[in-house]
Length: 140
Image (cartoon, rainbow, N blue to C red; front, side):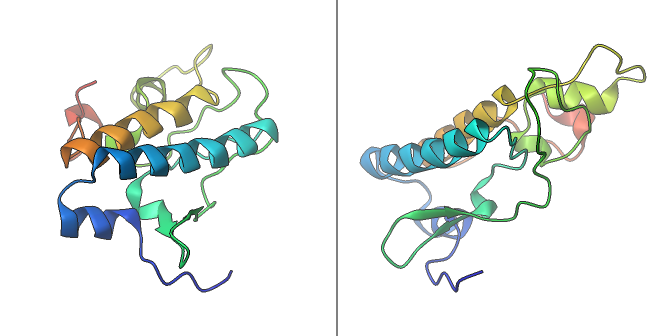
């Protein structure tokens, strides 16, 4: 992996509190481009959050940490394991972890788009819209 000296979005958010709307728009567009490419390859990223988005030397974003990504997800219910950070996880992902019987459940690429929405909110407002110490406390 190349050296990316710009730091992650979380550290920038911590320092600046929130981003100007034009910065957030640019960053979201770059995240959407990256996720669209992954989804075209049938890969669900599953861990979109500011910690996993790094600012390159040129100001462009780089998506990092593919440890939770799942390949070959072609259907809207193609993934069924509880992974990711609860604050950024879609309700269907959280239900997967809470439900005792997950037959017929699951999630797909749409779960990544939920995380993009949460990140967009955080970039503009300065904090994520949902918080909790565990899965049952995250109110979505």
